[in-house]
Image (cartoon, rainbow, N blue to C red; front, top):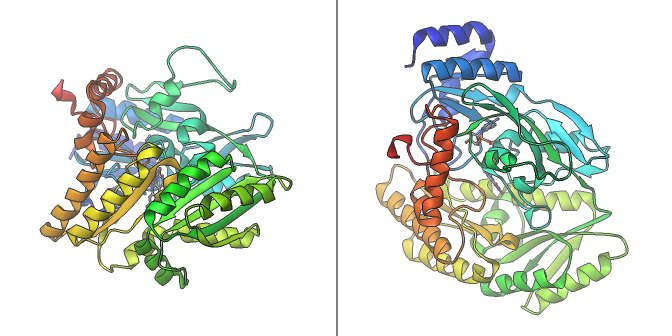
Length: 460
Ligand SMILES: Cc1cc2nc3c(=O)[nH]c(=O)nc-3n(C[C@H](O)[C@H](O)[C@H](O)COP(=O)(O)OP(=O)(O)OC[C@H]3O[C@@H](n4cnc5c(N)ncnc54)[C@H](O)[C@@H]3O)c2cc1C
């Protein structure tokens, strides 16, 4: 328990927006993934930037850890209060402050979710593109540098954030950029805070970039006999120049889980799920090019639709994939890997992973954003079974090492949290120390989400 007087001051300031209820603190220490509960000592719900500045000043003085919290869907123990402290839940800072159609941007508070933003944009002709499966908050997505099904065309959070407002560990509030399309004014601070996992400061405002809704959207599925065929098709599709906005892979085990969960009848073969963003005029040739690249590699049972309802159904199916796979093994939790490799190494990485999984006796369907070289094995485990945990962790570790050896990364999208710290030195070498020095410079007392992403401060 931290300094009682500071907690009293915060309780007086935040009133009903300060909580030490056992269920609230337990829920905020829980993870979507396999990690045990690391509950904070209190949860606070700010509603303004001034609230956050007040909170940070008190906690800096008393050296109390502050853990930013969006909606808690991160998968590597990012929000675990490993040293206790205060969880800063941004769910009440959830206003879209401005939609600026001519500059194609929107400014919002960090607790806005991506679905909420797209609902508010529905009459603007514009949309926000970054789409991780979960309905995550923009603050959480900025902090994990999230990406998802549409990254192949529109990029990750890094490419889609114009500017951030940040409250630093010393209580100062800064804006990282202007509204201009480009800027050569010094260090790229916006990029520094994107993916910082709340270790350098708390985000209180975000300006995101928007895209025009395409004239014609076509989504569909295509099956292949082998994983190798599907992966080779992915490589060829990239060269057709088809305007691919989503390109997702499912192995046979994932298809089986999807069929059972959503009462479908897809053939038990590897599949690609795709979406093309075209104009009315270019659509027929775009689909033709896409189809012939798939046919070259034995693509079959090709089905597609441009009807909104059918397209939504397909992507709802994909977004429920994690829960479909969990439902295939009742009572199990998941270790979710998210390696990303250069496109040319994708086949090797998927096939080696599948072999390792089948040798281990662990159930581990594979699916992912193969258009980016990024895929997941969802390793189903009983966290109470040490043998199973050891086997699953060995597969996850081997995948991360394999990705690094192939010139890729241990994390294409989920981030580091506490779960992937062990791979940072191998992947980044001295560059990881540089991250530590940045952390030390901006947060010398280590109050901002301690224990995540960088080495412990006293290692230096
Ligand atoms: C079913 C499922 C599918 C998923 N698919 C994808 C996917 O395709 N792509 C992908 O990238 N991720 C995916 N994820 C992971 C997760 O959705 C992302 O990491 C997401 O960005 C987390 O957002 P959140 O709002 O839940 O943040 P949280 O989990 O609450 O927090 C994430 C991190 O951000 C920090 N943080 C939150 N808000 C702030 C703030 N205002 N200021 C500073 N720090 C803050 C937290 O301290 C923590 O380190 C998936 C998760 C699930 C459960």
